[in-house]
Length: 141
Image 1 (cartoon, rainbow, N blue to C red):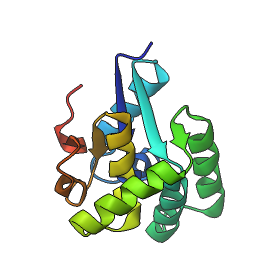
Image 2 (image 1 turned 90 degrees about the vertical axis):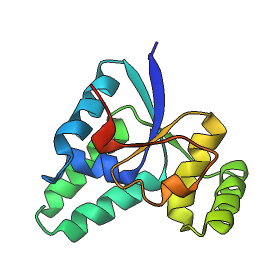
Image 3 (image 1 turned 180 degrees about the vertical axis):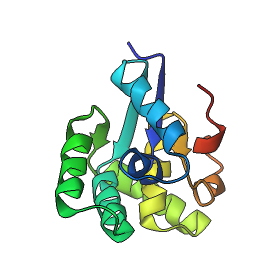
Image 4 (image 1 turned 45 degrees about the vertical axis):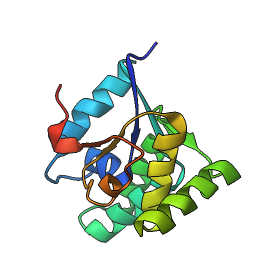
């Protein structure tokens, strides 16, 4: 049974496939998932955002992006489909904190699951006062 549960956003997951700052810390999170120490949740939109970010990166070939989506789908992240409860909470946060729906849905999942959100780019998520947001670069082993 995992010792801890977290929601992660796409800014964390994309670092597993791209050489960019924060990669080492993101890999540590991945290893905790693989060893069963941590449980990771994310809204299904994570898949779309990661593929889009990897494509925009321009350093990866099509086959690498396809491999990334395959890996993400099989890695053990609990991907949550958008349902009316998640959508309604995300809309509340979107309006209350002037966020995009994309950012708000991660916060909504963290709120509804009562667990912290880890982000490599926590600027927008930190606006949501109802959740705990952890910056990737501040995560300890």
